[in-house]
Image (tube, rainbow, N blue to C red; front, side, top):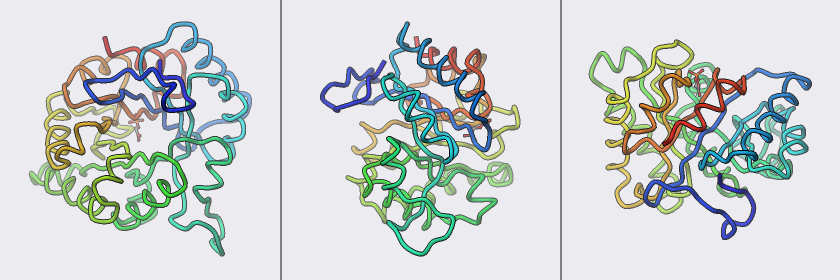
Amino acid sequence: MVARGQPQERQEQRVGRRTRRVVGNWKMHGALARNAALLDACVQRFQAAAPGVEIVVCVPFPFLAQAQTLLRESDVAWGAQDLSPHAQGAYTGEVSASMLKEFGAAFVIVGHSERRAQHSETSALVAAKAAAALAGGLTPIICLGETLEEREADMTEAVVAGQLAVCMETLGLPALGQCVIAYEPVWAIGTGRTATAVQAQKVHAFLRARLGETGDTMTLLYGGSVKASNARELFAMPDIDGGLIGGASLTIDEFEPICRAFD
Ligand code: PGA
């Protein structure tokens, strides 16, 4: 288990020079009572028997205070699912990095395919959000991935390379190295259709190669219908350092075995 707190206090479980992570993405799910039960269960199960990975839950904005209260003394980190690219100002409905930071968030997801598709987020905006997160002291989890049409047209590598290139140009490699990348093929999200471990590994190896030496220390997560039944095979791949977990992060009985699927 990676204890949060001062970096020098962390007992990081690493793959070579990389930190393993499992990140729950609650999406627009949750209610106070249900969250409390899930967060309490996370605290108890993971403190009692550490799985040797950094565990993060990314909750809807209204539940950040609850996560802060219930996870404060635990080994589970928390974060948000989006943020504004702006630091402050007349941006009705937006939430800034400093606001997330005040609620103890350490991570924030940016560029999830649901936001790219449903809110017309471009790679330029995603990169600007990642920059805002870094400036505010948060670790952005930058999501990349191709649609089914793009995969079938043999464009997977071109698409993810293009998405990554915008982040590289905007942030620069040293700053990008502070981020987490999540490869999430759009066709595998919430569909029950997972990329095979070999398919996912191929894209992860491709992304890591594009990142050069910077990639040697970066956590690359896979996301898209990860479940207790397929996590072990995915996480055994040399370039897959953990997962971004949607539906299966909503119940402790599914989430816990995924967090333990590394040995
Ligand atoms: P899923 O979602 O695990 O429910 O497929 C993953 C994600 O969208 O981050």
